[in-house]
Image (cartoon, rainbow, N blue to C red):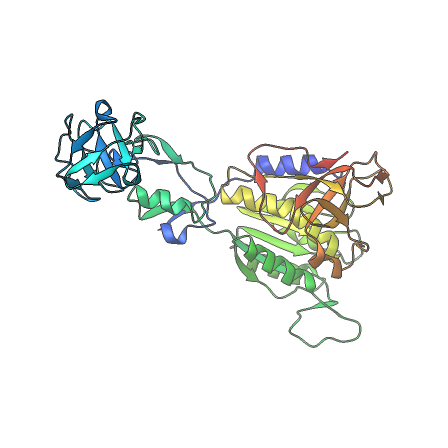
Amino acid sequence: MAVSITEALDIIDRNIGSLSSEVITIEESSGRIAASDHIASFELPRFDNSAMDGYAVKLDDQGSTVQSDKIIYAGDVARYTLRSGKAIRIMTGAPVPEGCEAIVPIEEVSVEGDKVSLPESIRPRAHIRFAGEDIKKGKTYISKGERITAYHTALFASQGVTHLPVVRKIRVAIFGTGDELRPHYERIEAHQLYNSNASMFLTRAKELGCEVQYINGSGDTIGSLKSCIREALNADLVITSGGVSVGDKDFTKEAFAQLGMETFFSGVEIKPGKPTTIGKVDNTIIVNLPGNPLAAMVNYELFVKSILLKLSGASASHPDIIATKMAEEYRVKPGRYTTVLGSFDGIHFRPLPQQSPGMVSPLQKADGLIIIHPDLSLLEKGRTVSMLPIRWHSSSTLKVDIFTK
C-alpha cells in the first residue's frame, strides 16, 4: 500500500542515520558536515585591545590636556600602566594598557609635541574590544551536524584549529534498468532510448557533494539486475530508475528482494512518481525511482535529498520551503497530492507550461516545486504557495509543512 508524502519522509527520518567521520583540513571543509561539537579553548579576542588608532585615556582627563610619551603597537606585550594626566598612543589591535578606561580616536584629539588635548566628553569603554566579547572560552562555536561554510574556517583558524572531523562523503551508485535503455555514449537502434536518468542522478549527486559510481545499465532479467546490484552494494546509496511499476518485465523489486532487501515503503501517494520504493540491503540504502524523467526528478528532490541529508549527519535534515506567490492562475485535478515545477523570480512562482511525467525539457527550467493539497483544484493569481527550492540548498532543523493548501 502506498504511503503519504509525510509518512515517506518520516520513514526516511526514522530509518536512516549518519555515516562515519573522517579528518580533513579546515581549508577542505566547506560544504561538509561537522562530526563533533567545537568548543572554544580560549577567548576571542584573547585580550582587551583597541578598536581604533588613537589614545588610551582616563575618563577623569576628558576636556583636559595630557602628556603622552609612549606608544603601543599591535603585537606588543602589554607592559604599561595608565595614570591620570597621561595618555598612551595606541594602534588598532594593540593590547589596552592597565588602567585604560576608553580609547579616543586620533581624529578627535589635538596634538602638539607630547601634549594631547582630549574632547569634552568621552564615553566609558569606548573603542575597546574586550577579551571574550566575540567568543567565550568553553562556548560551543560550531555544533555537530552544522554545515560548514568558508566563513566557518575563520572561526576554526581563530582557535588554532588546523584539522577537524567531518562526516565522510556519501558514496552513491547509479544504474538504469531496461533493455531499451542504452548509455548516452553508445550508438542506439531505432527501438532504443538513451538513459537520461542515470546521468541526471549522477550529476545531481555530485552537486549535492557525493562521490558517485556509474554502473552500466542492466537488462530486464533477474540475473542481470542482481549482478548490477551486487556491484553497487559497496556504496552507501544505490539509485535505480525504472522497473518498479507493474509491467511483465519490471523485475527490479524482485531482484532486490532476492538479495535480502528490507523495504521501508513501496509506492507514494504523489503525482507524478507513485511507484517509488525505498529500503535497504544490509547497510546500503536502496532507492527505486520511476523511469519517467520528470517523475524521477521530482521524487529525487523530495526523497533522495532527504536521504542524503540524513546520511550526511546534517542537523538541518528536513525539507524547507519558501513562501511565495503565484504569478498566474493555475488549475489542477483534485484528489491527489500533485507536484508542480516552476520558475521563481524572487517574488513569484510561475508553473512551467508543459511538465508531463515523461518529459526531459522542463527539468532544466525548474527553480523549485510546489506540492498541491488534494482538496485544491485552483491556485489563484497572487495566492501564497509553499515552494521547495531546487537550484539552491535549503533545509530545516524542524519539520515544516511543505504543502500548498
